[in-house]
Every structure is written in structure tokens, then in C-alpha cells.
Image 1 (cartoon, rainbow, N blue to C red):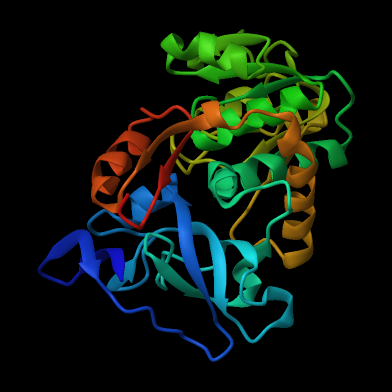
Image 2 (image 1 turned 180 degrees about the vertical axis):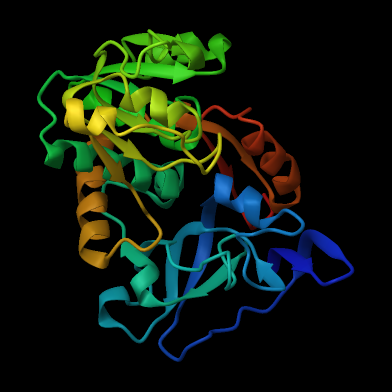
Length: 328
């Protein structure tokens, strides 16, 4: 079987396509034939030397995959069931989705709705699960119809899907991006306006900016998140899931105590089965009404993964990069 393997010892680092044998780590693991995977920012972190994310000296990378169950002891996932595989330590501490087959605990598996193909499942991928979970979290917080919602990192995987999903649900979406050349593409995805990274908040000399956004989906983190917090309207919320711009934030308590805003953390890795099922169910009802194909940046083979890691690390993607582990 072909797989993209990352190996690091004290004296050497290597990554590339090798012949590997899938091995279950537990007797209850299910075997899935992978039809598609997708490239995530986390995958690029795993594939770096001295990675703080990778937790194994050797691992088949890939934090998500979609395909067909080949072998399983769980009746919920009988052979032939189409599934998405993601979560936990997949592609980080145990072999992941950049391979022709993957073993995974059934808690990592989600049966796909009939309305979603395995290819569409990876256009969605972990990024789309994160985006949909962000939207649902904002709605649970009280996001009202036709609210003005900011999306940062809007040309990336999570951001572009968040723009698409929010627009489909009737919100007024403002897309923030560091790629102004992609403005028309974002407008076509449903954004009503496209702004630059430095246009999120005004009045930098004040502790609070003007109230501009009812809510936000932040895929960037770093210095961007404090600017969102200080420019939310009273009672607003930001669903935060990204750290492309950094993992630390420098902010004050003023947005929280003077405007009652909320910071909602979004995690798609350890999401419990019930929550994940709800997200996929909502996506299953949504996908027939949106065109996912423009959200595909490109489709690549395993050998092309290093260049894809560079692109996603540099913010040079437009939507999702799909991976087909079997040579085309």
C-alpha cells in the first residue's frame, strides 16, 4: 500500500511516499479504503522537522479521509458503509489518511449522509466540520437572522466554507482576506463585502473599536482575534478555531465586561460522536443547496503533498486541496 510517511530521529528527518502495511492498533479498529483525503494546516505542521504537533517518530500523515469500510466488528459500520474518518490522534500519533487504506477506531468514523459523496466529504473535510460547528455555535449563542458576520482567513479551507455556509443560511457575510485578488471569488461564494486583514477594527487608539460585527468566525488567531473582539457589537460572539497568525492573543477584558461579548472555542478533533453526527446531518441537509466544486483548490497525488504543505502554510490556497492516494 502507498502512504505518505513522515519519519524523524534525533539525527535525521524525511518525508515521502513509501510502501507501508496498514496495522490496527486495537482489535476494534475498522479498516477503511481511502478514496479521498484533504490537506489541512495541521498536516503541514505534522510534516515539519521538529514538529510540536506530531507525536510519533514515524507516522503516515493525514488528519482526515473519506472512503468505504472494508472490515469492521461494529454493526453501525458494516463493510460497504461510506464514511468520513477524522479526529483524535489520526495522522499525528497514529497512521492517517494519506494512504490507500487506514485503520481507525470506530469513534473516529462518521457515516456519510446519502447526499454527500466521499469526494464532497473531503471538500468539506475537517475544515468544513470546523466551519459548520462554528456556525452552529454562533446560532446556539443567539445569532439572529440576517446578522452581519465577519469571516477571517476567508480564502482558506475553514474560511471559504464558513463564507459559503453562512451565506446559504441567509447571513450578511463580510470576508476578510490577505489575498485581495480573490475578492471576486469570495463574492461568488456569497460574501456581500470583502475587506483586508487590517480593516477589521477602527480607532486603534481606543480600548474598544466601533461596533461592526454581530458575530465572527476567526480562522486566523494571533493579532487578528483581539481586533475582532474589540469591534463586536454588544452581545456578539466570535467562534475561534485558527492559529495561522499565532497561538497567543494580547487583549483586554473591556470587550467582555463592557459589551458582553463571548469567545467560543471550536474543536473538531475531540468532538464527541453526538456533536459530530449533528454537524454531518446539518451538512447533509445543506450540501444539495450549495456548489462545493469551486471550493476545491486542486486535486493532487501523494507525491505532490510537500508543495501543498508549502502552499497552505503560506496562505496561498483557495479552498481545499484534495488528495487521491491511489494513482490516477
